[in-house]
Image (cartoon, rainbow, N blue to C red; front, side, top):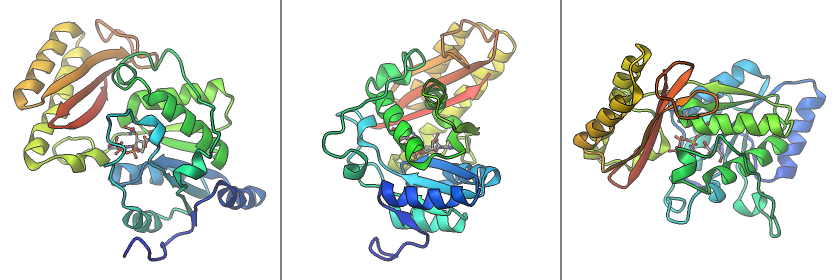
Length: 286
Ligand SMILES: Nc1ncnc2c1ncn2[C@@H]1O[C@H](COP(=O)(O)OP(=O)(O)OP(=O)(O)O)[C@@H](O)[C@H]1O
Ligand SMILES: CC(C)(CO)[C@@H](O)C(=O)[O-]
Ligand code: BAL
């Protein structure tokens, strides 16, 4: 199918047409589920769609590569865009409407409001992508206002983002249940991600060490081991495997993301590392 062929499911390009559709559903007493994405869909996204479908009568998926969450030297320009293929997969998964606005529709001239979430954004992704979460929080606040879903599903692969969205919804009294979706992985454990498409076959082989290192360290941490030596060993292992840099490998409180010396409460082990020019993130419950 070419990019210009009609898409196999209803597509809303404007906030007004999306709102009309959703308004009709709401008037009919239907429950609405929502899965926001940046497209280049894989089985991880589709698992979120299935979760939304199980919790709602109608499902909206958005595809919007949000410029405001990319830093100036990041990959906004080359981020994969494949709307026709994505639409075919969403139609096959029973999605009721695709919301695919343009940048001008989402950020019309004069738009000047930014949503910033404190505390949980301070470290980890917030340190290495300092403008990222303001972009995410702003666009997620807009999307939730546009769709007004009863339930929205966000992946645990972007664990800090999930916590940011939960905080945003609580702090702004947004009437949507935020449901976490477990990370879907490739056969060798690598977390599915649209950015995996950037990996050469050599980098792809190196990337497989990321989940192995997380799993090994998490197993030790669950026995009460100190985090510091495991983190140093894990970083060394990733560099030995061929990663060019490890931005962080960190044990954090599962709710606040405050650093932990031991997993003496619900905790998360989170990592960001560069293989070639590709930045990968992953995390695991401890
Ligand atoms: N492997 C996965 N399993 C479950 N959910 C996922 C997975 N990968 C992404 N998601 C979730 O899908 C939603 C949309 O994410 P996004 O479109 O950025 O995909 P992505 O594959 O994470 O892309 P990127 O490579 O940009 O990080 C987010 O809630 C994200 O957490
Ligand atoms: C939540 C999101 C769609 C906001 O642009 C994005 O950060 C993503 O795909 O995870
Ligand atoms: N999946 C998170 C979106 C981003 O990296 O910008």
